[in-house]
Amino acid sequence: MARHASDQARGEEAPSMRVSHGAPLGPLTTLGIGGPAATLAELTDPADFPEFVALADGCPGDPVCLGEGSNVLVGDLGCASAVLRMNTRGIRIGSADADGRVRVTVQAGHPLTDLVATTVAEGLSGMEMLAGIPGTTGATPVQNVGAYGQEVADTMVEVTAWDWRRRRTVRLDASACGLGHRTSVFKHSRRWVLLTLVFALRRSGLSTEITYPTVARQLDIPLGGRVPQAEAAEAVLAVRRRRGMVLCGTNTESRSIGSVFLSPEVSPAEADRLRALDAPVNRFPDGSSRVSASWLIREAGFGLGHRLAPGVRISSLHYTLVADDGARAADFSAAVDLVGRRVLDRTGVRLVPEIDFIGEGRRPAVVPG
Image (cartoon, rainbow, N blue to C red; front, side, top):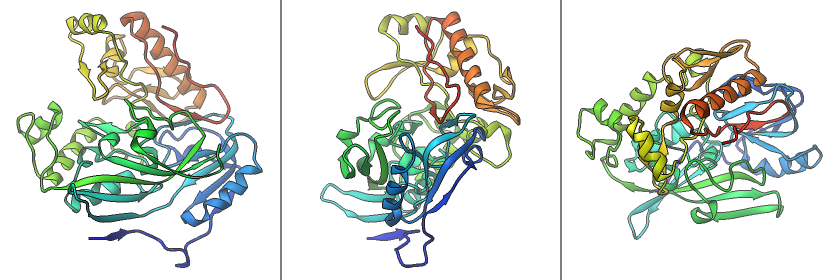
C-alpha cells in the first residue's frame, strides 16, 4: 500500500523559499532565547533547496539548519551565518519487503509527533515509544533520539543529505551515520543538511515490549508485556506530561530543551560505587553503563524549582533546566556550567551538555574531569 500524507508536489501553489533578514531566532526555539539571524531562509518545498545553497554561499561561516528548535540554544548576539528553517512536510508509506518490513520515507521537516501518530494509526510498530518528543524528523538521527526503550537507530535505514564538503546530495545507510548513544556523525557538525529519512517498520497491532517501569506502571502491566500501539503511545504521553515534557503553549515548565545533559558513561568500578548509593545505573544498547543525569543533579543538592541564574531554574516537575521570561543565553550557559561544576564536586561524575549551541555569544562549558 502506498500513502502520501501532506506531500506537496511542485506546481501546486507551494510557496517559494522565504528569506528574511534580522529575524529573531528565540521564538523559533523551545527555550525562546537568543538573538537574530542575519539571514533566515524558510524552506517548504524540497525542490527549492538549491536556492538555499546559493544563498548560503554568499553568507559568512557555515550554514545552520534549524527544525523546531527543541535542542537549540541561540547565542545572545544571534547568528551571522545563513540559517535554514526546515519546514518540508511529507510521509510516504511503501509496501512490505520480503522480510515483512515496511519502508516509510519522510521529509526532514516533518514533525516527529505527527510521524509517530501516523505510524501508530497505520499499525506500523517501532516508533510508538517516541510519542510526544518535539522536533522535526530530520533532527532525530543527529543525536539518535530515543525514549522508553526505543531509539532512531532501531528503525532508521538510510538518509538523503546535502554534503557541503562534496557539494552534492548523498545517500547514507544507517551504518554510515554512526548512530550511538545520543550521537551520530551529524552531531556538532555543519557538514550535512538532512533532506529525507527512511525507516523500516513492521505491521503489528501491538507495541514492542514495554521495558521501562514508569510506562509499565502507567499501563498496569508487567515489564516485557505488549499492548495495542495506541495505548502504549498514550501511556508514554501521560508519563511525559507529568514531567512537563510535552510542549503546550505558554506553560513555562516546557520552556526547555528536554535533557540538558547526557546520562554519563561510567566505568565498572564507578558503576559499583554509584549503585551502592542507590543510583540508577543502566546498560544501554551500545554496551555502555550510564548513570541518570537527573539523579546526579538531585544528589548534588539541587531541588525542584531551584533558581540557578537570572531567568533560569530547575524545573518544578523534574531535574532539567527551564527558562523564564527575561532569560538570556548567557544566563542559561552559566546555569549549565554551575550544575556541571557542582555535580562533579559532589559526585565525582562529569556531566556533558547535549545542547546544540548556534551563533555568537557565551557557550556552555564542558567541565574538566
